[in-house]
Image 1 (cartoon, helix red, strand yellow):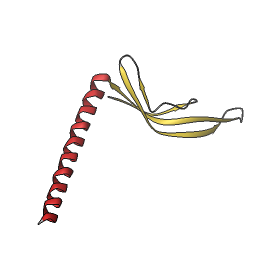
Image 2 (cartoon, one colour; image 1 turned 90 degrees about the vertical axis):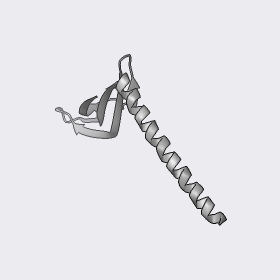
Image 3 (cartoon, one colour; image 1 turned 60 degrees about the vertical axis):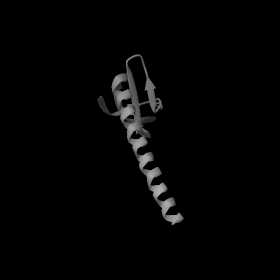
Image 4 (cartoon, one colour; image 1 turned 45 degrees about the horizontal axis):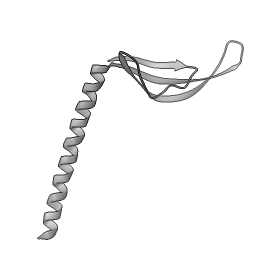
Length: 88
């Protein structure tokens, strides 16, 4: 993972860009306005950019899915317990 920090651009970025080698995640996208050297107003964007290798991103998604699966299982077990308590 490479955290490129806050990036400025004149073009609104996509939240996710996938190229041949990397997955680029752009978050906290904000429209900005600055005054150029000639006094002209320049509208642009600033955002947080993080670059992952495809393998890093896949691993991160696998771990996230495993956590989500575990949370769903725990919620289902809690609902079963509540249901059983209601039947008694």
